[in-house]
Amino acid sequence: AQDYARAIYYGKFAVQFYPDSFDAHFCLGDAYLGVGEFKKALDVFKKSEELARTKEELLVAYNRLGLVYEKLKDLDTALYYYQRSLGIAKELGNKRDEAVALNNIAVIYEKKGDLKKALEYYEESLRKSLDEKEKAPTLNNIALLYSKEGQYDKAIEYLKRAIEIDRMYGDYHEEGIHLLNLGRVYTEKGDYKEAAFYLDEGLKRVIKVGDKYWEAVAYEYYGDLYSKQKNYSLARDYYKRAQKLFAEIGANADASRIAQLLQELEKRK
View 1 (tube, one colour):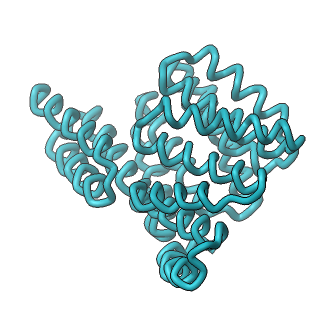
View 2: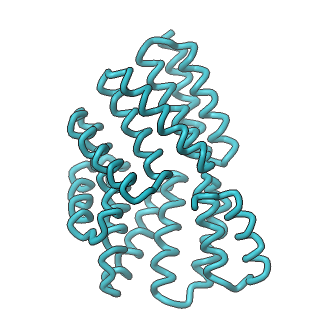
View 3: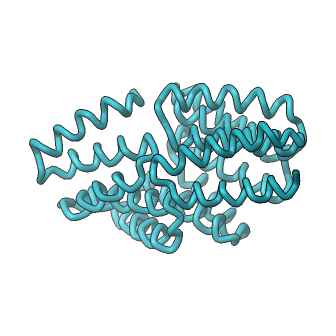
């Protein structure tokens, strides 16, 4: 139900009463992940890895560890865990998790700057996806790759397909994230009215589900929007809000990145 605060509350009780339970630790880790508490999530998922008794449990533990390391900007460690997850998925003949792992590996290659290899993995992930709902994150990621290449109309097309799937399956949280990314693409394209509309819609959703990490990202995106419009005062205010929230949840690499954006903003002023 995306009520992460209550999930954390009950997850702590589950871990307390069942300290040797993989499920208890995994669910608590997922709840921390949902609100952007990455360091806490990492500790809990490491414990899940220790408690895993089956290959299926190891597969999902590796997936989450990869995701947390990705959020913490440790890309090599993230790739290591995603590849281990892919290996087990292939061994088990699990097409769904194979598609998920392929998508995650593509994200890492994209962040490393190898866009060609990233697109190959994204396309393979789409081919392997048996469930329409699972295609939305991959469509989102392909859109962001096209945006990096300046192909904004193509990026918008892919993001709108992802949002359509989110709405079809009632995934309010993912819809919020994809709306924010759509707003960011419109900013890059120079269509500031559309950008503001989609950023507003996305921010409402991530705040409602309590996702602090994506709330901070939204403030960063607003900072980008106002910076492009040369409204440096508002840009600075939003960057500072993003920096503060990133620091509060332990996303220190993101907080440092925002500090650099603030320095660049002062130079432009």
